[in-house]
Image 1 (cartoon, rainbow, N blue to C red):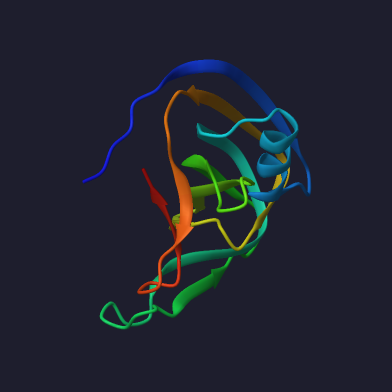
Image 2: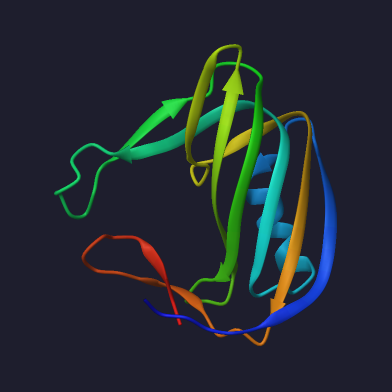
Length: 146
């Protein structure tokens, strides 16, 4: 395990509007407000897009993602971490659980999903922590390093 310590800075409350793309709109907001590291909590509705639900083969590196479509309006609750990439740009890694009727879909929203009607998010800025998402040659992912 690797760790870094920080403290809570600013707290932002966001209302995402119908059709906003997650994580894009949250990353744009973080860049505008110069949020380097933060925690994101998301609730609301998701209308369309794709969710990563795991690798096709757990042993294969780099992994090939399994992507499932979001087929219509779903309730959503998610949590994520904003950290800068190698160029200093804020990148949101967010996992969420989406539900509709008696079905649930849980995974990573990285490929992008659109808000249905409304999404609400809280961003807790973390000051003093030192972390960045850096390329990992084995997985092919940008992993958070401290």
